[in-house]
Structure formats: structure tokens, C-alpha cells
Length: 231
Picture 1 (cartoon, rainbow, N blue to C red):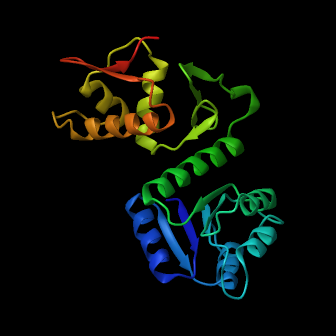
Picture 2: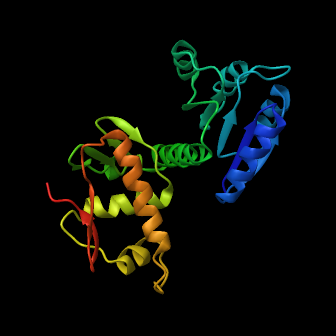
């Protein structure tokens, strides 16, 4: 199991994040001071760190600077500071991502998954296995980093949402029945409950619309299933 370390001094925020991350299937450890958080990183193995900036005893930027001297573990900053200059400075120090408070828990989970995928790929895939980018309309799919962009803007998807859209983009002229999609993504026998498919398709459409409200991407073929709209 991948373990996530939360370094956040606000107990309510820390608990809320921990519960959401546990529900997504990850192990979680909470630290409430900068010193405790840094000691956790030094003494235990974590897959990713969620790091607040304003922490007692040692600030988040101090932690980030010190950790980057010995580890490239993915670090996502979660902070109420929303100034562009602050974000740029922290990204230059070595942060992998930046989320501004207040935040959406779904986005936090999606960014965790995205950063874990990117870290895994960058550390495990040899250059000879790098795959070409896939294109559909203004969407670019990078299988190497497991990222999807619309006009160079990163689209944050859950793991299942990514897998569904990837499958459709790889098979742009094929109509997938609900059973096809379910069995391809969940690797379980489809027993007729299509709520999971409908919910995930709806979520993907909603996220795509936010980036380009004037474009249609996923077509419902009545009585058959789903496919991408023909260009």
C-alpha cells in the first residue's frame, strides 16, 4: 500500500485530509509540526507528502529545502497563500504541485494520483519504452506520465476516469457498451448495474467542459454505449 504523509498543524484540516485519503485506498500518517514531519520523512518510507507552509517549529519551505537534499519524494504544497510569486518560489525549491486552500477533496485525491503516476513512470520506465503522445481534438494523452491535457492545461482525473478516457482515445471509432467499459476498467464481470459507468462518464464530461465548454467529446450512442464524437 502506498503511504501518504500529511504535515498540517490544523487538526480539523489534517483529519479531513486523512479520512479522504484513507477512503481512496492509501495508508496515511499525520504530523502536526514541522519538526515531527521532517523526522517522519527521514525515518520512515512514504510515497508522497502533503505539506503545509505555516507550521510550528519548522516551516514548510524549510522542510522542502532540506528534503530535496536527500530525496525526490513527490511533495504537494497545501497552503492558504495564493500569491503567484509564492507558488513559483516553492516550485523552484522542488515542490511537485501546489493546492490553494480552501480546496476540493476530490481534486486533492486526483492530484495525489497524478503525482504518484508521474513519479513512478519517471523512475521505472526506460527511455526505450517511451510511448508517443496520443491526440484527439484538443486533448493530448501522455501515457508515459499518465497525464491528459487540453490545450496544454493539465486535466485532473481519478485513476478510473483516466483509464476510461484513455481507452476511448486509443479506440476513437469504437463504440463501447457499458459491459465493455466495466469489464475493461474494473476487470470484473458486468452484472447490469451501470451506475458506476454513468457516474464516471458524467464526471469526465463535466471536467472536460470546464476546459472547453464549446466542444463535445464523449457521445452516447443510444442502445449501444459510448464513443468519442467523430472529428
